[in-house]
Length: 590
Image (tube, rainbow, N blue to C red; front, side):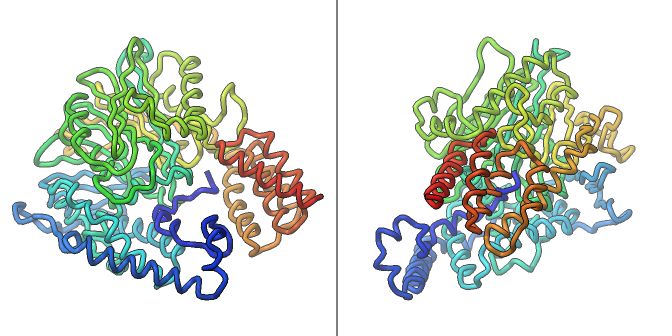
């Protein structure tokens, strides 16, 4: 959704006191805000805390480097065939006509890291720039950036104790090709570790609606050929630029099982992937507290599953032994078991959800296993979020789309409507397709086939890959990755006026945000046009109401808030926000 870009490191700033009255605690302790010493007191307080935390807890972690002496290394010498095709020995990077980057690497952990870093250096550095420019924009003060660095050192002090040494060695190799520009944040290896933890923090910030992923698995009577079929939308949004350079990697490690993964440059963890044995993993965020210390990033747990598990039991055993620091659902499919289950992990609990007497399983953003049946946080999330709504929408779509095949599954992942086909506005997180997905992917584990979406969102062509061929000598003979004759066509919606209007709506939304912040003024005609671009979406009326409230046109604001309440509002807290503004507006009119 347009309004909620992912400030992944926002959790650091959330603890800063606002003396203008936004903090209820500050209102109660108004003594501290009655003089201009307030900011200095707060600054000194956080500075002392930071110094204390650094000195007491991080010495070992900041001195730590992984053991790489055990691995032989050949420094890659990259050969460029053209501006989008690069190689080193049998390692290979190319961009296909759908603008997806395809990477094949092999070797020891250290060699994998170096090979990936050397081949993707430009992409990885660009991705770093996109990510850290957001952080710099969010924390422009150099003084606060210093505090942030100190807090990052403390927060991530235990991560190295919870990440396998072979993965650390791979990260070390990869990090040698990252940019020098951000060494002020942390040295390259530690920065690579931080970034893998940042993904989990993004998931922990569920209250900011960073993610709303949807996944499902069907088999037996629910598929055209009776085989296992899995689909997922990965709705992790850090802005459009972050999603441009999608990376599909095929990894053949010296130890373990070859696998494929869909993510972004600089990532060795797995958010969506399948191994050569037909084990698949996809992750969906659960309701988490903001964690107090980083442990094992969830993407490295799923990476370990792909590299070392041949079936569901082995996947469960791997997940059970790792200490995570956020709540997450891992949908695991298995060709050898011919079914799928959901592993539900959190810092203090562990559950496995298996369906009985049915051949389908759905996963949104709440837990379903018995281990969480009394979890108050999970129950509250079901009631207040859009997770249950999407779960019910999946049930509705499966009833209509019987005997699924990859094409039908793609249409489910692309569905933009609400329950009973209600029009709920484009970008509404209650939809399966929220028009913000980093990627969508479809797996056929028994056939070892996978389809990966191309831009924009999951609307572009789904490109087909056959792992049987890619992890054989066949790929080396013709140099091709994709099995293009089995691609799934792009969604016709991408060529529609409605989609063009949605893209304009996204652009104009940033202008409305500026106006609400008081930086610019808008005309009534501008706001009417803005609403017409996405007329069924509650958000356009809410934002318009906030603007009119800002400029003290309370009658107009009241009308807009009332319109918003007639639409399908995403969450209970969102609806409460609209009602709160309406109440404030009515009071102004008295």
